[in-house]
Every structure is written in structure tokens, then in C-alpha cells.
Length: 306
Image (cartoon, rainbow, N blue to C red; front, side, top):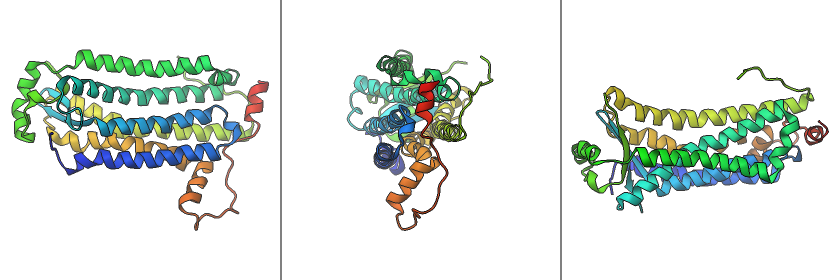
């Protein structure tokens, strides 16, 4: 076990538990409060919650540390069931990195759906057809496999990297780098115009709200997951020693992502926000208050007639 610090040890566990809680509430609200006009998108929203729960599980099981020294960057298994088997731990790290890629694959499918719903409503039925659902699922999974293979075949820690990190690991973690699973790198020297079909005012409002929520869901992993990881991987190129600092920035930020992710939709869409307030703030929720519509009952009918 490589003990890095209290925050690094407990943050993934705390955020994992919070993620289980927030995503369970998210899925419950989708199942109970989503209007029929959402159609197949209801199940796509559920995929966010299910994926975030899986993401948190992997994050807790594969306890990951990070270190940058000179022109070398690495991530390693700090503790847990994979910490004592170098080869198995390396594969676990590859799976952990694969989930980072899958998080963007899930978002890509949602953006495709929103584009088709707004600009190509004639095609919206493909999201209810098993063959196209299978194609999209395989596409997302394929992206993860490509990422897994890229890490597995290109970032194996050779003897040279371990020798380079031997002193830093002794200094910062009092650990033998040759007994720790590690992956890392050593650095040497179409048209943008959308054609929106004619829609009712309420339908357009619904799609705008969903698109805004999706944009926020994209910003969240970009800000707290992608950017910290890119910085951690890039600073060795300019020989900036962050050493163990990444364990208190990138690692914790990535652990927080699946907890924060469902909050974007639950707080941004009035229907879901109202349901959330009914559950947790029933005393302050006014059932007589009128909230703006987020969906329109004619959406599914309009899609069928188009």
C-alpha cells in the first residue's frame, strides 16, 4: 500500500457513496417523473446514471495515484485489491483509463440525439430500434476499447521508467517502485449552420432546455476531469515537477465527477428540479406554483407525423 494522504485515501470513497446516492435519486426521478413526450431519451438519460454508478465503482476499486517527475508522468495503483500484482494492477489501470474515455462516448451519443431531435426529426425513430441501439452501444464500447489498447500497448512501464522513478517514490511515498503497478509516459526532448425544422414553441423550449443541460454535463467532465488530467499528463513535457500534487487535484477531481454529473440535469430541468425539491425540501415546495413547461405532449406525435 502506498499511503499518500487522508484526502487521497477517502475522497474516492466519499464521492463514490455520494455518487450512488445522487444517481439513484436521478434514476428514480427519471422513472417516476419523466413525461411520455421524452420518448426514448428517457432511457438515454438513465444511461448517464447507470454509467456514473459504474464509473464510481471502478474509481473506488482501482485506487489510483499519480506522480510527475522531470519528463516522466505516471499513474499507479496506490492501494486496494490490485496493488500487489503488477500485471493485474496494470490491466486494472487500463480499465480505469478506459472509463475516462467511455464518459465522453456516452456524451457523444447524447449530442447526436439532440442534433437529430432538433435538425433531423425524421430520423428520431432510430433511437427506438434495437439494431441502432446496438450500433451506438458498440460504438461507445469500441471507443473505450481503443483507449484501453492505446494505454495497454503504449504505456507499459519499462525498467528505464521505473529506474527513473525509484528515488522519487522512495522520497515521497517510502515505496519500492518495482513492486507497484504503474503506467505512464516519458517524454523526449462540416458546415456549422444547423437547419432547425418548424416546431411548436413548447417543443423548441424543451429541446433548448435539454441541450443546455447536456452542455453543462459536457462542461462538468471537461472542467473537473479532462483538464486536470491533461495538465497532469502535459507538464512533464516542459519539465515541471508536480510530484505528488496530482493526487490532491486530478485524482480527487476525477472521483467527484460521477457525483456531480447527474446534478446538472436534476437542477437544470424544472420537472426534475421540482421532484428533487419535493423529496428533500417538502416544507418549502409550493405545489400551487406554476412552473414553465419543459416538455410538450405533441412531441412524439409530431415526430411520427414528420
